Picture 1: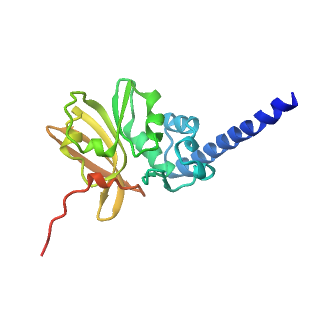
Picture 2 (picture 1 turned 135 degrees about the vertical axis):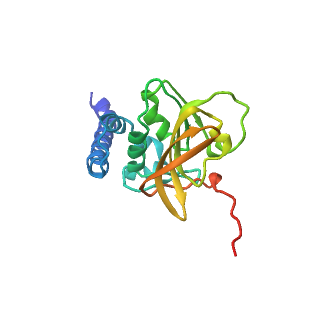
Picture 3 (picture 1 turned 90 degrees about the vertical axis):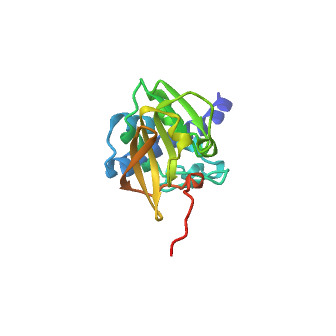
Length: 207
């Protein structure tokens, strides 16, 4: 009995601490910033964010800023994911494509809410694909300068997209729909979001 208690107590204590941190994240970062949709708060209370950051960062997994991943990319601050999910309004009938920066956090959050989730890297998102699968909802885990045709082609005729958008060094949450071959984005709230350089537009000279 003593040996068993010694082995399980730290695990139980860690789980309790993690749950408390998630509750504090919801109460102090999401609710105070206007993210109040119950399905969003429920998912963010259930998914252990510490499982999606490097081991050395697990103790600060719930801070209100981005954390660098082992691949050099970043997992955004919790508020970004709360705002993104609330704006996306994922449904059980949705087929979802997540452009994942490497943490796996966003797919874990949205997965139980929808019918299907597929995950691709930013590199794959900007590369032409022969796959015929299209998606009713695309979520990008980062800020982009433009969507690009390869990703637009993966969307259904009236597909929705929620992403971060970067313009002149300022990042904002943005939403949009596909119309014809194009995807028009509407910038929303200004918020810090890690950039995905793969989506950078080609710079032109000006005189």
